[in-house]
Image (cartoon, rainbow, N blue to C red; front, side, top):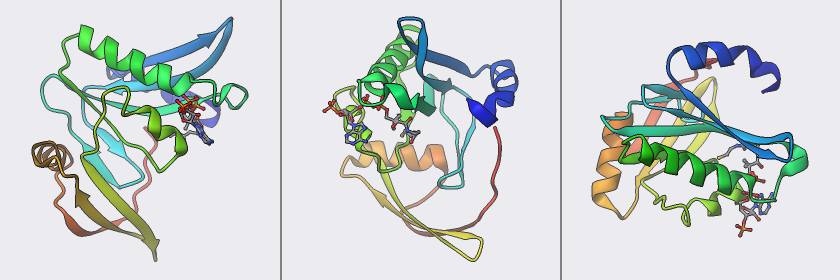
Length: 159
Ligand SMILES: CC(C)(COP(=O)(O)OP(=O)(O)OC[C@H]1O[C@@H](n2cnc3c(N)ncnc32)[C@H](O)[C@@H]1OP(=O)(O)O)[C@@H](O)C(=O)NCCC(=O)NCCS
């Protein structure tokens, strides 16, 4: 995890689970699964999964293993492990990377869309709901955010 390596102990201590993809003996990628509140820096909001929900975050593929299906396999593997441990839904956020097309085949559906811009230390966000109104409502509730314009101070956190 490079400069974030020092965060591992604290994450594991608060019950966040780490999943890795190995190719032969090498660690090709990793991602984390939380069932407790987790900060989402890109949108400056805390996601609070409800009972039997989780949140997949901080997924990274090692540069030398990109575009080999590592992220797709990782997300499928975490989702399947989550199901086995009794979770009925997992949330994930993407940041407009091409790899997000791996999410739909893994069963993920869009809930909320954020257009984010930074201005004078503030985050301006336009929040739009997906067409799946029940899902969008649950996501709004987990993030405690409503559709429309949201302005937040920028508060970087290491976690
Ligand atoms: C985003 C990231 C995790 C993708 O990992 P990856 O292991 O290379 O992704 P995959 O190989 O599983 O790709 C999934 C799909 O996206 C496509 N894809 C991935 N990266 C792509 C790129 N740069 N350009 C075009 N398509 C791309 C793959 O071809 C694949 O599509 P397919 O199933 O139709 O073949 C990796 O680039 C990364 O670690 N980036 C830095 C961290 C980051 O941005 N994390 C946020 C994740 S939301």
